[in-house]
Amino acid sequence: MFNFPGTLYAITPDQADTQRLVGQVRTALEAGVRLVQYRDKISTMADKLTRGRTLNQLCQAFDAQLIINDDVVLTIAIGAAGVHLGGDDGSIRDARRLLPANSIIGASCYNNLNLARTALADGASYVAFGACFDSPTKPAALRVNLDQLQSFRDALGSHVAICGIGGITHRNLSEICGLVDAVALISELFGSPEAPHTPEQIKHRIQQLLAEPALL
Image (cartoon, rainbow, N blue to C red; front, side, top):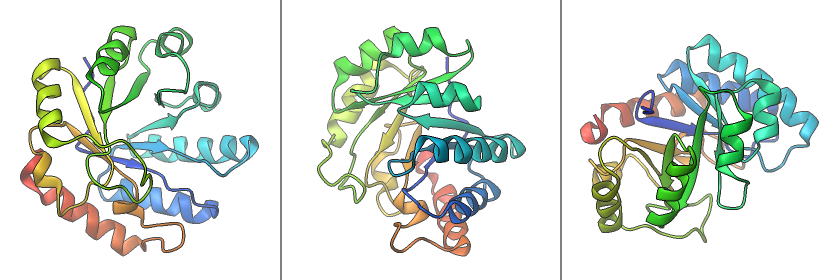
């Protein structure tokens, strides 16, 4: 059974400046985040390898875990803790077969309980539902409402690790109290590529979120 190492799951933004990206992740780790997903839709594979290795070393220095978005090969190449797969990103069963036995595998299940059940049967460590709210990163993302999240929690049971993603902020966090075990955050933590948050803003936002009793 998988348990999230804390309630905050930081997902990296599409940041072209490697030094700034590493600095943003370091700040999040210093503030208490212990699970980071490296999501990068703009870099070449060579750059992803370099960035991924740097982020993995950084996470290990903080006793945190790095998850790679969408890419089993990159996960293996850098020795990351695991991978997160969307609906079109390959087989969870194959990923479980290829990765080390203790690897974390996350699955995007959108607003579909059957996808979650299949993912878990195939070896997923956790399932992610969302977008929970309007998402600035994926404005066209499928929405999952709070009643659905409650029904999914009831159907899957308390032993299944569930992550909420999409549009979650310190203002609406309390609305998903008890429905998810962790929240995945991109712009709420890091801002946008055009207006990235400063280290002080990142630390302040994490402190706000960790002080919110909704997920404790």
